[in-house]
Image 1 (cartoon, helix red, strand yellow):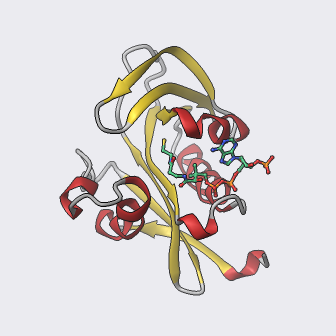
Image 2 (cartoon, rainbow, N blue to C red):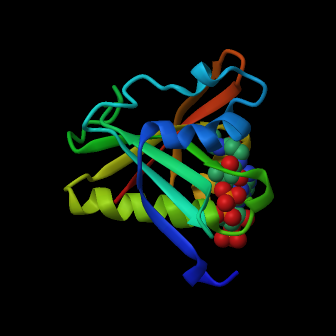
Length: 149
Ligand SMILES: CC(C)(COP(=O)(O)OP(=O)(O)OC[C@H]1O[C@@H](n2cnc3c(N)ncnc32)[C@H](O)[C@@H]1OP(=O)(O)O)[C@@H](O)C(=O)NCCC(=O)NCCS
């Protein structure tokens, strides 16, 4: 795909719901797409557009993980790409863009709670598993992963 067709920019929490709902909360009410802290000033959402259609998203929250000592840390949440566009490098692009932005703000560590099926994606993006797997009700097994910027 021609890279110039893509546009990546900061978006509002509400805009992310267009992708969160079908990809992360299929069949659930729109309220299920609202994450704690979504509208805090410290939270940042990014969207990647193809021909003005939002096709991928990621969000970063100023949340500290109890086992990460670095004070300059953010949590990655709501990583998602519309099904029709998965496996084309879109997730990687929008995540990289967000990480580069946070790096300019002095953030040193990004962590996330990754669905088991997505750990391979995060590994490709430089994240490593730490700690034991755990279950999130209604969603399934998760692993905490982190990377240094
Ligand atoms: C996980 C997700 C965000 C990845 O986005 P994507 O655009 O499909 O991924 P990319 O095409 O950018 O993949 C980047 C690399 O990761 C690999 N990858 C992607 N998804 C993977 C997976 N589930 N398992 C293993 N590797 C994966 C790709 O093969 C690619 O590797 P390459 O560089 O060697 O070709 C997307 O598939 C998605 O929305 N999945 C459903 C929702 C989900 O699980 N979100 C994560 C919640 S924690």
